[in-house]
Structures are given as structure tokens and as C-alpha cells.
Image (tube, rainbow, N blue to C red; front, side, top):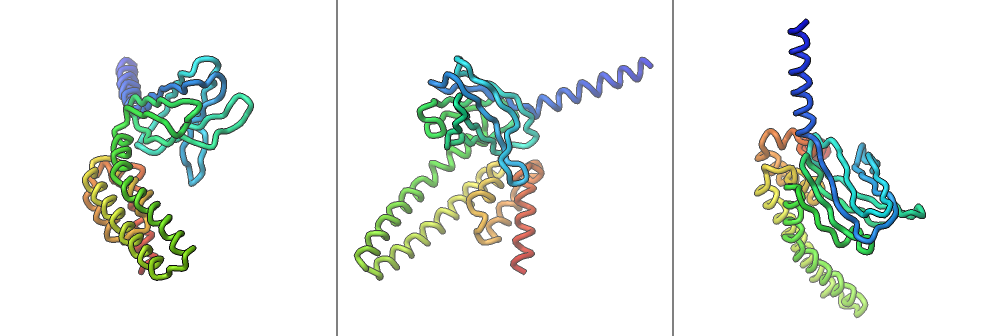
Length: 235
């Protein structure tokens, strides 16, 4: 009996340690928010579902706890006191760590500071990297619209070629960044979210260099399945 109780205690201790390793402690502040409900959401089977919520009544500080077995994108959504849902969500890379989100009611979803997530830091770095491609693409779109209005077909064609080259450059930059971040879950995530329609060889190239723990992560498994499906479709 004593042996059984000892064994049970050891199992419970290891179980508790395992749970702690998968636990996300999310806290933050929505400046200017007096009353409302914050919803913690994630995607399950292609649907966005709420997994927890917290009521705000006077104090704009909030906190959540959630098990995150594998880093993945979560979302923070706000429902105001009158039931109105704001159009903007705050996406963030959730992982088992202490994560803090600072925002405001006035600029909810637009002016956000997120700390405590390594993958989120890598995602922010990636967004800065590709911003120049995004800005240049917007310029090309504006120039193309003007050219169409003026009936300058040759310029429209030239601008389209420039856009195609720009997209190709962005794809290559994304693949290179994913290769550099192969030890983080951000690598397979970017291949799935940003360049899923790229040549299959690029997806394969990134997946091949992923270490086993990243291959076994949520997005690592999804990338493996996606590559397999693409290959079946193309054969």
C-alpha cells in the first residue's frame, strides 16, 4: 500500500510538472476600457472558437491561463458592455510562457505591444522584413490604376511584371527567413500562412531542415500533411 501511494505521488508530481510546462500565463491591459468582455480564441477545425473569457468592470487589467501543448496563433477579441463586438482582433503567437499584451480601447488591434513569446518576436521581425515588399506593392497597385485610367496598356503590362517579380522576391525572403528560424514553430507557420502556394520544392526545403521537435509541433504536422496533399494533387 505504501509503495502504491508513493508511486501515485510520483505520477501526480510528474503530471503537474508536465501541465506547468504547457501552461500559458497571459496578462495585459486595455487602456480606457471600463466595461466589457475579453474573449480568448483560437482556430479549431478551421473554425474560430472562444476557449475562455474574462469580464472587465472598472479595472482594465486582465489575465488568462490556458494549456498550450504546442505554440500556435491565438486571438484576443473584445465585446463591449452593450454587446457590440469590435471588428479588430489581436492575433498573437501563444506558447507556454508568461505573455503580456498592452493595448487600448481606442486603438484595439492596431496599437499593440506583445512580450513574452519567442515566436511572436520572430513574427514581428518577419513583418518588419516584408514591410518593404508590401509598401512597394501598394505603390505598384496605385500606379497600375492610374495607367488603366489613362489607357496605357503597355505600362499596365510592365507594372504587372514588376508585381510578379516583387511577389517572387517576397516568397524567397519568406523561405530564407523560415530557414533561419528552423528551430522555432514560426518556420512551418510562415510556410503555411504566407507561401502555401509556392513551388512545392520550397515547402520541402524548409520542412527537411526542421528538427524533430518542430516537426512534431502543431504547425510542423500541418506542414507535413499539406506537402503530402500538394504532392498528390500535382502527380
